[in-house]
Amino acid sequence: MTQVLIVGAGPTGLMLAYELRRAGISVRLVDRAPCRGKASRAAALNPRTMEVLDQRGMVGEFLGNGRPLTVAHFAGIGVDWSTLPTRYPYLFGVLQSVTENILERFAREWGAAVEWSTEVEGLDHDDDGVNVELQTADGPTQERVDYLIGCDGARSTVRRLAGITFDGSDGSITYLLGDVDLAESPSDWLICDRRATGTVSVMPLGALSGQPWCRVTVTEYRPEHSYEPMTLATLRECAIRVAGTDFGMHKPLWVSSFTDHHRQAGEYRRGRVLLAGDAAHIHPPLGGQGMNLGMQDAVNLGWKLASVIQGHASQALLDTYHQERHPQAAHVMVNTRAQSALLESGDNVTAMRAQLASLLRDDGANERLAAAMSSMDVCYAPDAPHPLIGRRVPDAEIRSATGCRSVFPLLHSQRPVLLDFERTPERPAVLPETVDYVAAQQTGRRWRLPVVGWVDVPSALLIRPDGYVAWASPDSSRTGLPAALDHLHGRGSAA
Image (cartoon, rainbow, N blue to C red; front, top):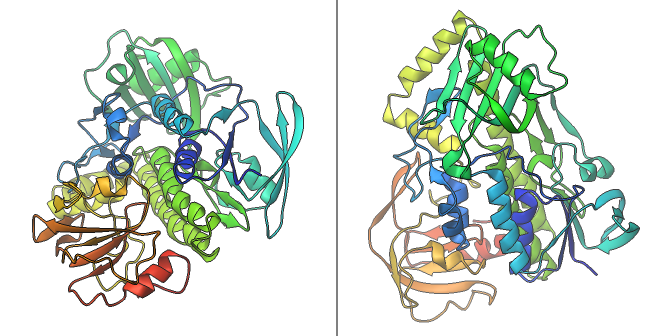
């Protein structure tokens, strides 16, 4: 019997399939589309996603297929990410289609091939598993699985059939976009130029795609024209009305539209049915956060699901997936709502934009917003006794007996790690075999965390497979470690 059926082979589903297969979980990955499409709705990875890929030893493939973008913005107002304490202090430009191809290759290498032209038509779940009705290219079939994961986008069939609510607001603004050739391509990103009648942005994709395409996005404040059918002519006409030019658009790769709607699933888990990515949350792609949010959902869920299936953790661990990831998506939606509001017309909005631009000249305010937009400020345990607990572990330089020179390679195995800077020669007796033990020497006494600032390097820390700190001790007492291990396995609460 297949242990996990993943519906949807976009970045979220592919990342989850890779995580589970690496952990030895049997996976079936299906998608209703007949094949992978050419469209690339997303075009960038944020610093935290780059770190996650580094933690899995995958980041090199991405670095060779994209480039750092020189600018980031909040509603068209520049935000400097270069001071973020990470090896990747930038928005990394890479087309979603390229991201999917790379992730699919990694997933396939571990035995997870995409089954195209396959969609879910019914489901029934109980305490022990899920019965799924599938329609394939060869006809209808049924499968019994331990868990069903909906990564099937905003119109998720899995979410609908599971009866999970998707509350929020419909969009009031329509954005038109297209990947097109231009008669004269800009050398860099034209950031959301706000005009009297709307906004326009142009992002060169040539260095990302090897083709002379640019992404043009246009919106009108008070449209008096229908956008149906959505064609190149529709995009060109809208650009002329807003910007006074169509930039010489021709040879479209694809054109589409989206609105500023915001919706979120009421539950990320209902029994043995779980949701991730756009199936769990949707918002306008302002600031390049959507694909990143979904991939980080997958990494949060993957190790927990594997641990439960393997019998190392209780079902309660899966509840922490909703507890941790639902607030993060809600946080992003507040961010994108604010950006949508700041792109509106009117003197009041102009004044607010000027005030925000002034505030962002302060280094602290700039870093706080940059950290929020880049997922570098995520903290799953804000009231923890140590500032590292609940936050991503920095890729600090270390020296270990195994030859590791930094923290992230310790996570390539996708297992929890107890990193001991006391260099105790013996593995602690309280540590289960499911947790790796690494004695090492730190090369510095302090680590800098986004927004928080400098913190003393702990005596020891327990790192989750997704790179977040589950426990840290300022001294050699190891107080709280047993409770943290219980919490890591879905038993009790972390101390």
